[in-house]
Length: 185
Image (cartoon, rainbow, N blue to C red; front, side, top):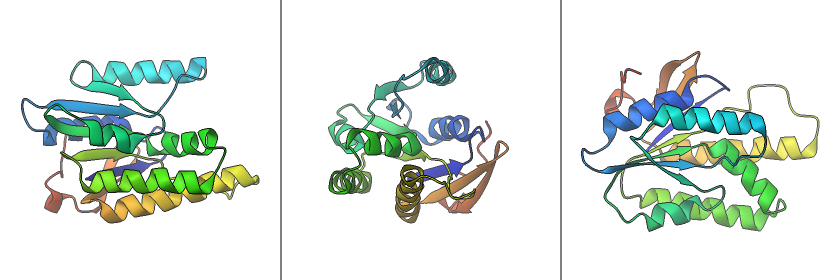
């Protein structure tokens, strides 16, 4: 299990795809679990660009909320799952659950349990949102807090954690020991 974090446009998704190709079992499906939904023209363009980057090497499954359910229901032989991205997933949880903490906690706990019994390697993309100025509004602070907690828990469970900066991967946990260091992309 590998967590890739960093700022916006730091190369996280591109690195996740390269890494997934390297670690996936030959002949097995590569699954791309997308959390983003088309809500405006800019996001549509971003989604299209990501699809183009993936090409036909990944089967795309779109799921904005129930990541655990998708992982548990995978039936075909799966070589790797890329989840892109946890940041958007947390946003979706806050939006679609009307910020109900019990419902959010249940979904997060189900996801963590699914990760522990995953059928194959999982590469997850998230954003590092806690390095800037504290947001002035309550919802933005709650979002950063929720994502920060989830990132910490997933990082704790992960075999490797990669911080992307200006397109350069920095392994802050695992790395060579996890068998994933030096992936060219």
